[in-house]
Length: 248
Image 1 (tube, rainbow, N blue to C red):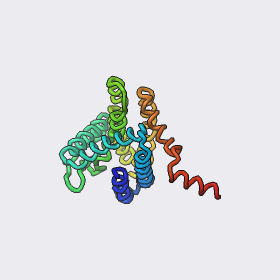
Image 2: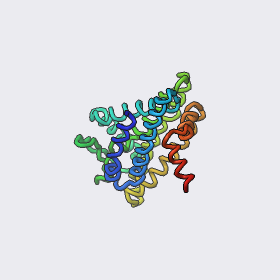
Image 3: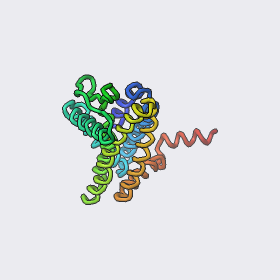
Image 4: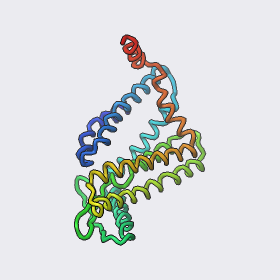
């Protein structure tokens, strides 16, 4: 039921993500695909209950989702916490650009439906830093999967944490500065810099960091691969699909 409720929540979000991210079709599409994945996980949890089985990969993904979701939504809903993080990221983004000689400053933090900090370039409004600009989503994903691993010593957990989380935070600062530079100096559109260049760069960085985490924590790789093996459990849904494909 937990997976179904969580999936139901994300089923309401694709349109919001599309409009909030200035027409970002990638986030909206991933959200739609994620809804089906969450319901599929719920189905396999039910299958485990009926078969009295304990699938470690399911426990891993449930634990990592709980940890990631709990802390992300906690910060998201407490504007004092999210505001502190947003203000910090905005200030550090501005500092990076100032080191290259650009006239960039932050404005006053705005509390409303969402928390934001405006950034001014040469005295004119440029972009607003919001929670999505802090890299919190990616950070919480890595924190969640590291915490949820079973039978892993603390030293390797801390090593994986140190090799990923601070790097994500730092790279996100550089990405924010790059978006402002592309828009204000190169004359590129915000959509191109934020939704194309920035997203591709973030994806490449996350793949590299995931590979590094796998090297430190091979158990993480094993659990993720085991999730792709769930269809091999041959539950009623898989059997029905198999019969349909054979008829064709």
